[in-house]
Amino acid sequence: MARTPKKKIYNAELTRLQIDLSYLRDWVGRSGSRVVVIFEGRDAAGKGGVIKRITQYLSPRTVRTVALPAPNDRERTQWYFQRYIAHLPAAGEIVLFDRSWYNRAGVERVMGFATPAEYELFLTQAPIFEKMLIDDGIILLKYWFSISDAEQEKRFQARATDPLRQWKLSPMDLESRIRWVDYSRAKDEMFAQTDTAPAPWWVVEADNKRAARLNCIHHLLGQIPYDTVERPAVSLPDRREDDGYVRPPLEQYRHVPDYAATL
Image (cartoon, rainbow, N blue to C red; front, side, top):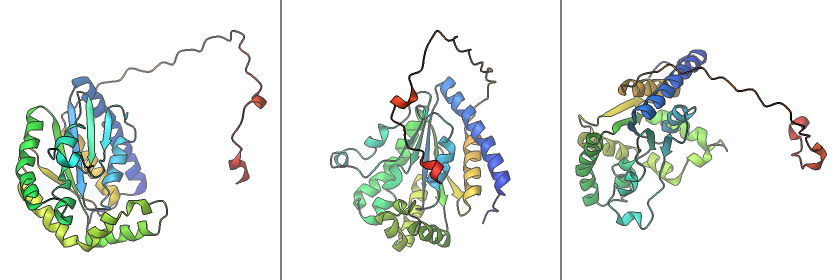
């Protein structure tokens, strides 16, 4: 298991990496690049935590997180990859998929939501689809967050007793505990078919949350050949002089009661 960075060191390094992420975002905007990052892995493996740290200080107008719900009746009749294509980036954008088209090789495979024929077709088409994205100039990165059985159980137990995080325990998450080995087999089969030279899988050891966050972000930054440009200093303009404006009496407005003062 990875060594846990001390909190002070972790916070300092995370801040440094987040500054570098802002430079990466600037480069993507200037160069008109398109970036897709896929986050997959076990339930409770910490994918959301890494995505949150990546996007924390980046503009949501150009850095988007995509977490699609189950397909509706119309989407079930489409080509499987079709609804994901609608969320691919335009020039100057970064898209982070919090789970992706690999749902077909994971939950749909294990839970029987996809037929054997649909599953086999996916394994055939996924590498072709990803190569098409790369050939068109999209930068594609795929991360798999690996977590041990014991650590997942620990996180599930913590969520079960935390009213702020119980929403994270969906019926599908609970079912995944029962089918741990089935998911392991599905992941192994998926890697065997989709861990390709153009679009390899990168495994993030995620039992240690702090280490996983730093390792993933550092690796992501190292996979994209961005450069940094010195930003001009920002000079705030002076306000205009008072031209006789008189603020209305505060008493005429409805104010939120000062609940904080009662604490």
